[in-house]
Length: 100
Image (cartoon, rainbow, N blue to C red):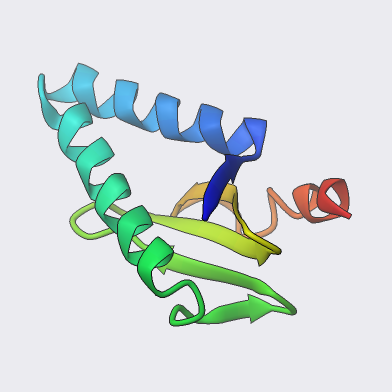
């Protein structure tokens, strides 16, 4: 399965890793490992994780207050959002329109 990132999701991932690394050196790498672990679990069983709406699913990261929102389209795993739990829950909704 090919993984495709929405440009804003990729930016969110990078910004979060940089933020954590500025707080505590090496913590950004831990964040990225937690993300990669979640992504590997999603790739193994993409249908396993809860549906938010329609075909959009999410998987929370371990140890960090973030979730990955994704959908499966044909043979692609499309990562739409890397969301901090404290952000407004609808800030990324425009990305659903971009996908169609």
